[in-house]
Length: 177
Image (cartoon, rainbow, N blue to C red):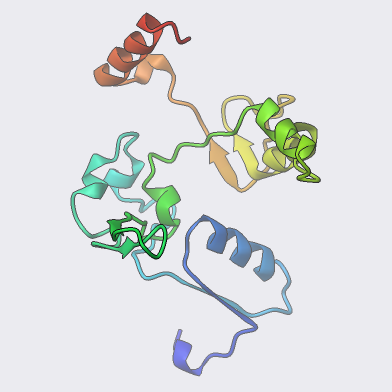
């Protein structure tokens, strides 16, 4: 594509989680022309680099291929500059954060709703989580979806590396389940 000569209804800068979802939703309308621009490398299905597929992708952080080098920002005007590692790859930080999917506890969402965040109770956000997920382990269980755009799978203890078992043992030794 010769983007310099193309015209788009929407140009989305950044192929991170939000940018990809937004581009997908907008491009579902065939009348719209949508461009998604990402500075880092593309990672199409079947060609995802091994260091990103790894459940412990430490090599990703040992170079500049998938992160912005020395990106700095201040938390406040008077705060010192701090390095913020941000993904520079299709999928953004979600491609290099061990690809972990976590939800808050139901009571956290209920607390938000009780504090005035309308629409954020557990029962109100759960359908959105289910819509997002394509759970490869639990499918259409009451808390999970099976038709969403984000594949969810678990790494069960039988496949954990030794350091994960050691970490889990330490948690149990501290009284955490």
